[in-house]
Length: 108
Picture 1 (spheres, helix red, strand yellow):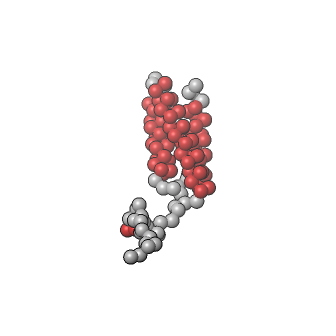
Picture 2 (cartoon, one colour; picture 1 turned 180 degrees about the vertical axis):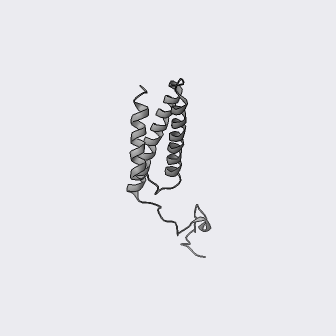
Picture 3 (spheres, helix red, strand yellow; picture 1 turned 90 degrees about the vertical axis):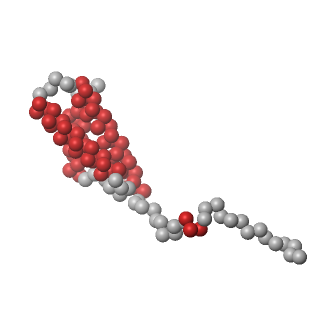
């Protein structure tokens, strides 16, 4: 009879489920930057939606410009949410700032 027999415990997660090749995707600095940009673009999207609701008596030219600009904002959101390392470029940030000034100036 064995006196000090140690009981072998089964792991909570089966060994087959553990993927040792997984690495952290993206750097922390870029992820923080992406999250900040995503929050700002969502705020811009909300301001543009409010502008569209408030100013229903605008010209067709303004409405068509708003549609194109809103599509670009949705594209930026899709780009940011598609991957951890995706951030906006310099030109996209400039146009986002321009749109933010344009559409937030009318919304109180």
